[in-house]
Amino acid sequence: MALSFATDIRPLFRDGDIACMKPAGIALDDPAWMCIPANAHLVYGAVSTGKMPPDAPWPPAHVSLFKTWIDAGCPA
View (spheres, rainbow, N blue to C red):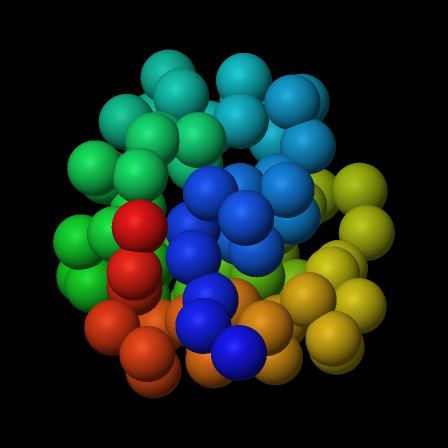
């Protein structure tokens, strides 16, 4: 199964998550930003440690999907 940012990763982020991170220059909804591996790894570090989102950590399946997407080369 081929993963894509638009289909598989963007839906993991809620509108509130996106709005919260925009002022910090983190564009969770922008494939041009998120598909840069360094940026994806930055976000992965936050979601895999439970730092993001602030209200409750992602379920392990979300974290695993995000990591699989990174390992696939962060396809748009």
